[in-house]
Amino acid sequence: MVITIKRNVDEKQFKNLLNWIESVGLKINLSEGENYTVVGLVGDTSLVDINLIRSLDIVDSIVRIQEPYKKANRKFHPENSIIDVGGHKFGGNHFQIIAGPCSVESYEQVLEVAKAIKKAGATILRGGAFKPRTSPYSFQGLGLEGLKMLIEAKKQTGLPIVTELMSEHYLEYFDDVDMIQIGARNMQNFELLKAVGKTKKPVLLKRGLSNTIEEWLMSAEYIMAEGNLEVILCERGIRTFEPYTRNTLDLSAIPILKEKTHLPVIVDPSHASGLSRLVKPLSLASVGAGADGLIIEVHNHPESALSDGAQSLKPEQFEDLVQAVDVMLPIVNKARDK
Ligand code: PEP
Ligand code: MN
Image: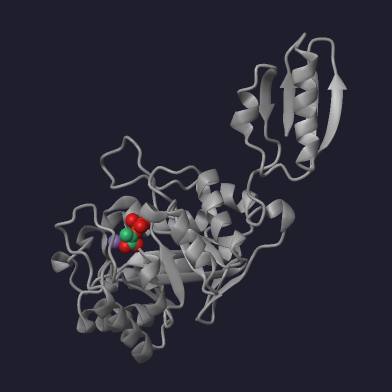
């Protein structure tokens, strides 16, 4: 962190600032120029309130040289993190496809979809039991009953499962869940992040609708700071001015994240576009951009789905997508579990 001090400032105020910097355990690197004095802060500056320092009369400007996230930062962990979800690895040369319905609607529905996506090549089953719907009058998910159906589909097919947790009160029912999803709307629900940070389960952390990449990494940091280092990031589209798609898939987030963090990154082209016909092209673009996996909504009868039918693929469309992804994977030096 570098602070530039204005000219001819009050000596006492300047000394106070230097004393405070040293009192929080940081070293000072002072350089006095003709016009400005530059103070370099050496050490762990993650606890420094940058806005507080900026507000001081004597301060001209302040810049953070180092990112505020530590555990998620690639600088301190150069090699890719490999995260195992029920025997399937994410990160490095591994690539996984997660698929399943938006919501668990009945046991028959989730089982039929589970069998179809497994046959097509998916290795993990998704399905929401607790649904974060924009309207309180929309289908809210089957709750604990839905969770039981999903767990039963796991037992029948052998597929590990990922499902969304909306409140830590339900954590005790997640023992058989292989990966906990934190949805876009809860990306900055810090109490929830701390709660899943105390578990030993992988966490699928979706990007908030209007959050920057740095805010997203700080949310990963919340989970990791509690001791759980198993975080997989999921780009699911952000809100822009474009109304032709439900969200805008931020493809550049993938290579940026690969620079900034060692955590695996997957893409959800279903929520990013809201349109089933865009799911295949966006999936292929994501593979090309370096994603470590995909999460795709698949429904046996999208036309009568209780949520997100318009963006759900039919099993045969999903099969076609997996085959296309397989053609591309060798180009990016990745391989899917078979
Ligand atoms: C979902 O995966 O069904 C979901 C609600 O996603 P998001 O939180 O990204 O909107
Ligand atoms: Mn959905």
